[in-house]
Image 1 (tube, rainbow over the protein chains, first blue to last red):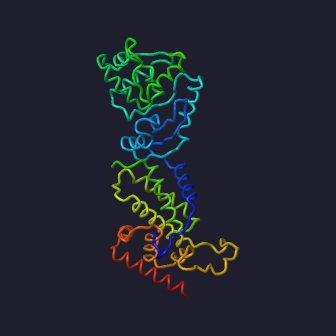
Image 2: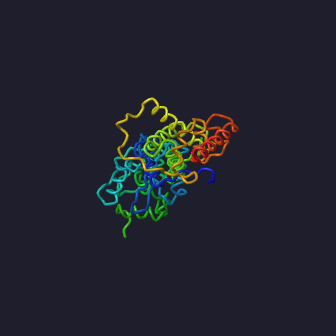
Image 3: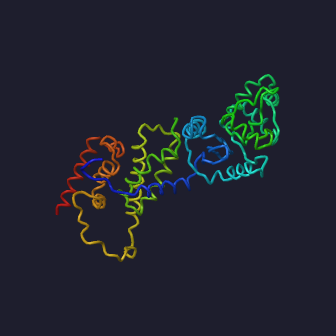
Length: 198
Length: 156
């Protein structure tokens, strides 16, 4: 650093502990946690309103890019507070252990456009183990001709799994369609729900 | 303002703030000042244009340390609170080592602030001046006088 007056020595663990005490008691606008699941690590973030983001950590540019987007679009007061995501973690665990078929989590639609919110709300109504089509959710969102826009809204779903965009497929057996976390994850979720066999 | 998420800001600067605070208020008070520093920083964070985040957060830490010293001056520590354990004989700071920061604490306020920000905070003279609300020349002079006085005291 410099030789005139040496800085005090300190244990980096003390600074880390002080920072941990800060995050434990601070009240950020957005709390996030990394949640492990059978379909990979998820970045979960919530506001006072509800769950705003459940992103696959290897998609959308990774954890840092997801947090940057939250910082820019919701608030930069973002802290890692896993305890604040306990209910999300518990409900996901139950879902993956076949003990839950619907989520009781409030959603914050802050990362979603108004039309996309309508599409995603319509998607939330598709029950566990059933499927729908892009055209159907577009119609339920109020515009039957907007199946392409509905597809875009679904692929930008900020809270996959909880808002079950994996249950929306192409019309007329034209394949499974895209998925925000990659098609292999869509298949895994549909297998879990008994829609796909094997 | 497009700030990075506060968690990243905290992780990036926690060691700089901690090192500055253990030099300026001591280990026991460092945690309280650390908490107050980041609470104030998070409050101002979304609405502040922050060109130099490290200097910004150390300036806040500097002010929290001043608050701490003022509060302590108003509330003298009762004699009963002094531990019975005798102080170790002659800490003998060879050169200007670690124990020297306690002596820095006894310097006049401007010299103390300049040395803390410059050497415990590792800020440039220009950044020190901005943190102290003074000119770069004055910050340089305060640091120089502080160092000179320290050397004189350590020589005796």
